[in-house]
Image (cartoon, rainbow, N blue to C red; front, side):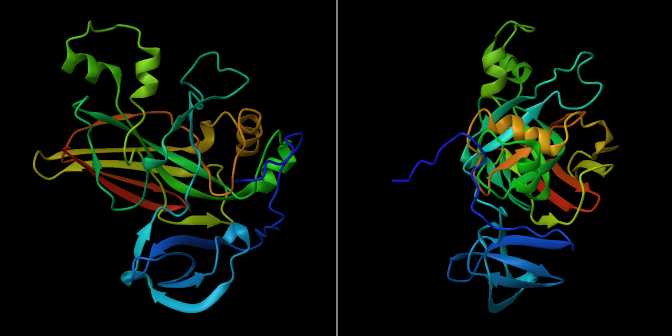
Length: 286
């Protein structure tokens, strides 16, 4: 049983993070199926004996990146997402963030297919910066939250939407669906992120490019934006979330977007964020 610690202030594993130089981390499965964290050095993975935010040290084992099966770069207990977090989404944005949660089964990474659940016939996608938590946080100050940000990753936030559900099930269109909208954000592989965690990169003024293609239909969409419109700095996001629940090392937070796009089975989504890398996922039938 996990020992519960006091919840009066920040709870930390005591690892001192250094962000003086850019570093890249990932998680992978070896040929035997065992999973490992690693530091990425060019085309080589340097295996670690623990997660990097837990003080993982290099073991001396080196694996070619091309030979590794990459996994979601952390194992989040909590997957949290922001809503209406960009300027222009809400003419009167709230002072306190608005958030929702996804299941652990939503975690996925580059190359993982995402199946449309049979309760809807389409999904929506958003290009988002993802925060990776590196220390345990509860009721944190902004300074404590800032120090707890281990790094950033590319995120593809996928979700079903009420109009699709209503169309399939014969519900009256336009019906207000507060609970249904939140429920349709749950789904297997609905939160791809990674495949790498970048340290030493900043979240500010990052160009985001979301592309959707379908070779069968000729569908081609490309949308470029940046992170200038993010209303809440990452330290504020983690501070406010830590007042709701305890954040654990490896937890992730999708910071939201300014626009979403409809995707169908057969579509391929590629999201590239300046300084953080590229993430590709294909939408498939259930």
